[in-house]
Image (spheres, rainbow, N blue to C red):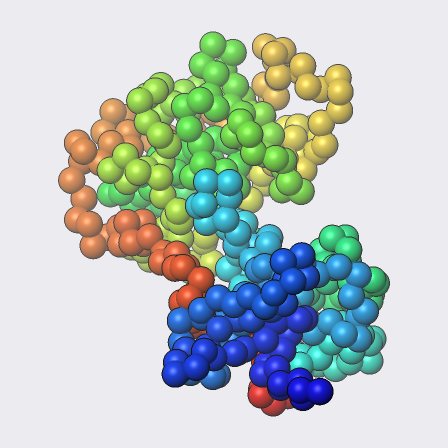
Length: 418
């Protein structure tokens, strides 16, 4: 009987092989339905790189079902979570990232760095507590440790819900988050400086005005398009048609008198745009504006939302109405039709207009404030963050390099040390 060949770097029934007279490595597996061995080129002759690419190939393509926790590498679960939830392709082949993909990227990298070749069964409470100590020894605050733990918890629970593993261990949390940085709220004078400086960037000024008048999260502001705006009943549907609501709910909000002039344009793909094109992130140009305005570095796009929430409560807007504007309040059946009421969230809407009246008449609408990059010439260097789109993963043969180089989430291979 012929001796069975060694399967190099085998993972879940997939292994590495080479063709005769070829240095290239192939992902190889036995197709039971076709009763034959199949392979696909990984596009590299380097064994180390091939092992990384094989692990990514398995995470993307292997059908994993009801694996024993002791037989399931944690790194594979983390990688499947990245490709299947955090950063995945939609039905049209476009890469779609969740809003918190940056946090997930760093959190998964820390999990992968600490746990190495551990399996799901290795996630005992004792070892998790050691992981928490390791994170704190590296200088991470309790609040951030809690976020890191939540990323790993989400990855493991996703694998269990999808029946990829038979059971999922309990993932602990860090209950003491007293060291969490308090959210920055701007004073009236600081808001005046911010809006005055923002006028140097028309698209940024539009972003700020929409954020302040809707209390929407930054990603919802960047997504806002004319089809979400009903000028007749003066309502904004912050959740675009076809988008599934998530825990970070996007509510229906009223259009304030202050915001109305900014929403009358109908020939735009997005209200916040650069040369007519949607913007993926506002963070860098916002940070540039904050620095130029002489504001603390703690001021972020989220500060606009937090500032207005505090202002509305200070001005006597009921808590339930503020929660509704923020998207913290679940919508009941009877509330679905409440948006058609002329007084829908009217107290909050009036309070926002009053806030802008207190800022002063110079902060009301001006025609020059419209986000029209064709009329207002701004040096492109100031907007590099918006026009330099992030590089998307290429075809499979080279996507492993992207996964390791950019995310730091490197699948564990048999030759890696703990």
